[in-house]
Figure (cartoon, rainbow, N blue to C red):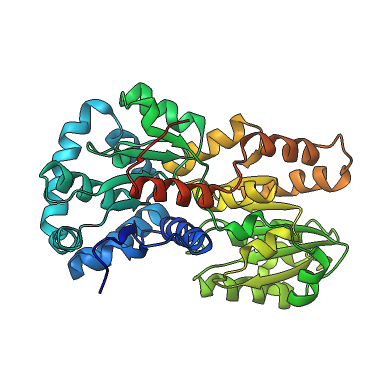
Length: 404
């Protein structure tokens, strides 16, 4: 039983991709480090408080669209972000969330948390509506886990927005006329372990990795979507002594394909058979919880532009090569990284050969790789999750948002 004077803080995410959940987990981990007195912290999946159809279809529809019809997803993403369309979008969201989210509404109403921290817009919309109806007294903090703002993230009655970049704050103030002093720039909430400096050789020993090789880290989020197989094929065909680390996430089929490719070169197909020489060392991984260690031993990362994976790389000072961003939020993430010259972009997987060859042959302090590392420092915000946890603790004690 919770004491009447104990503060309750709910960190709510939705399992539509791993990023929203990992952001919430990072904030919870930071709270564990702070250990605020007389405070109950709960980590909650909003979808667990919706009906079975919505819980199963919500992530499935998103994954289907971004995997098989990304252009259509991108069209709707930009169309729904038009401000003139927002009144209709707001109405449709309210109807959908009312029909499927009654359990979530009841849960929040009965629990009456002091602060709700939402790392996904579903919880933001539901909580904002309950605040409008005076059914909850909670302070609502929306932690935007995309690099740029979208209409989905905006909900009236939000007390404060925590954002990653100055550009996100500008989106809120210019488009939505949101009060600047109710916006705080904290960077993306990532696990504090990504900000630790770790011993490269010790990690190489523990994971059985080769030492002294230029290391390329290839990943594509928790679901392992994107042109990873084509990228690995291109890297192998470079016939260079490099090490390739490939995280396939939950995509075991992809992992099997890469393992077969590297074990049996002929399986790459006749067009590759003659030129394929395994001078590269390739090691695959499934869904893991030590991405920080792989980043620590890598020289460059090749990835899609999910907000969290890119933020983790930024925290590590790891130059990015971005590939196949999903039209919409990932395209916007990519544009921001390219604007700050913290990343290079691939239009086609085979272009990876030229980029890696250029980087590999020139690793001096005047090189492109060195410049990218310096540019990353200009957009890196340290201790993001810890600073968010401190600010949320202040909000629980009545000091809701002291903007920066």
